[in-house]
Image (cartoon, rainbow, N blue to C red; front, side, top):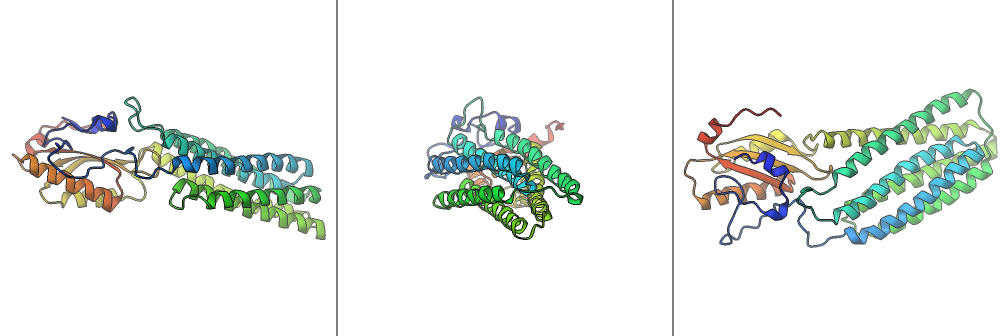
Length: 338
């Protein structure tokens, strides 16, 4: 029986009913602690506590985004519009984090056995393309304006920049007061801190324009912000693309994982090994494991327990589906077209 296709279509709460030669099924007589479920409930779920902090941070960021867009158009400030583009990317990032905290609390279903986290990756790809395009537009517009710098209403820019910096500092304080181990909150905090730095850049450029009349300071600040935004967008596109293509997570070396599995006691070989990610921060694995003929239930259970525990502890694989089979079974398997 092939377990690779079944792994993708089986909800965790259905259990693993394989026999001793075909998977992880164990009866109640064994005290092994198996954490098969990618979506099992952790002892401490911080998703609900993260929601209000993320919502407040997103609300502040969205208000300042609108203010910067309006202020940039009114004041004719490219630096302010550039920071607004950066703010847009971070607002979208906070929105994704907010959605992740809400979606992450939802249990998997039989129709969606891995939940709905892949929607975050699709949104991240779409947002990254838009933000990257905005960054390129800023560079093109900066090149066009360099020969004929536009008059910038530095007073308006200063007011908006100060408000933006204050809002970012408040949002940072809100997020910093949350759970330090919540990766969602930590990533959101990073976005807000970068936003604050962008507001400082706009503030400095506005002061230079106001005190010295050097209008190109606004353009220089815009270029610096664009240079900060574009690499982030490219990295996000690459990461989202890797997840959508179901590549192995960059944190895992598939060859090293295979070598480790092959070297476990009682294991003769590993094939049909697949490692991928659902939402970019997890690792999912399926594999066929060749063992001795006539392997008893207890021995099969020991091999599965050893491999699942090791995969989780050594490589951070949160969900592993393993099919134990004999060399004779492997010989009769049909070549697969993937």
